[in-house]
Image 1 (cartoon, rainbow, N blue to C red):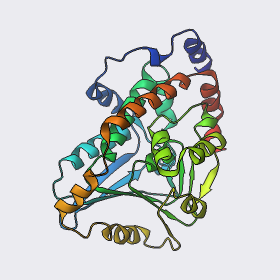
Image 2 (image 1 turned 135 degrees about the vertical axis):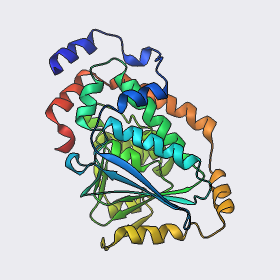
Image 3 (image 1 turned 30 degrees about the vertical axis):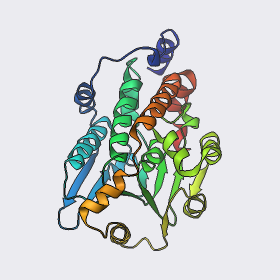
Length: 288
């Protein structure tokens, strides 16, 4: 299949040069069929804290197409949650998230529009999430790789357990960031540090991540770490819900960010399905 697909890509125009007629609804309807794992939401109106759980342990918490749609639906739900103050995302198992599921990637490579569809959906999700009027926190308990590392960047705060790590392996895969993580990472740690992480695929442990301000706190003891993370989040949402939500809205600059993210998506699509990308998928270098 990969040989056939490689020849297909090399003899066709890059998908970034074509305009898609697919709406987000159409993309979601197709991606729902790419099953495996789940992302679930629990809201507590009393505390104003919502929990998002990533659960695909048998695939290192990689996101299937269906899980991407789960996340899209969750963001839409949270946009309507008037009692919300904060959100905590965490995962089950020893890996936080390893990016896109390989079976989903293989399916998307069959179509010229596959990479465009995924990038469009994930950009929409992460941008909408970024601009929720809620204080958002990611609890990284395990490895965050590739798209999983990009996922971390959409949060206001990132917390890690001591033995966890963040690794942008996109370069190994013959790609640039495709889920809007490049711009977000630059906003968090600056251009030079971002370029270094992207060019080296270096694995960043918790203490180094804290030093470069990629994360905001380390939990030395990972026992009952979810409860610890909830207590940490509570210190950021002590004011009335109207005050917390207004403070968060002050941080938004949607128009300028949208232009920059569109450019990032085009750059990702210029590499998607290319020779280096396909060879990396075939040899599974992400986990080496």
